[in-house]
Length: 153
Image 1: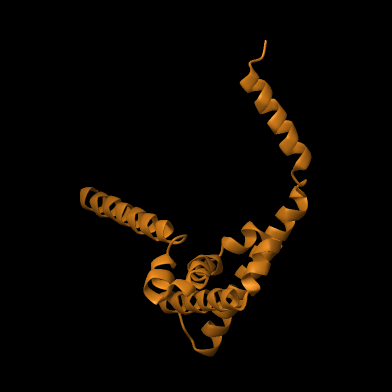
Image 2: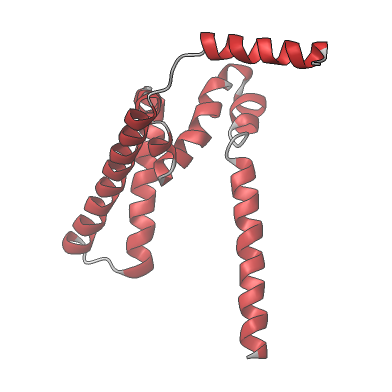
């Protein structure tokens, strides 16, 4: 015999299944794939252009491409275009580096009415802050492993 709690949970799950919009998973995956690929192709286009026009190579080339893509992500977020791309493409728009720029600029724009210090500056890294912290911590850990491994072997 079911308890009243189990019966309530089943009713709730049936209600949610009935009310929730049906996802079009294949279409969503396709949109994410081609938009993410397009963003990466644009980055590759900048890479090839900088390499051929300015004869950049290696780390310098990678840094300039990253700066351009971050700028474009932040700029399109400021214009409100990146949010529409995100609604259409879902995860395909947040994976590339432009999605990271979007995650920094969006909260800054949202809280700008609270002032520059307590609004924009304080809320800018609400979403991206943990990514930065764990990214730096994991890179330090990997660096230490390589350093110790190099000394031992």
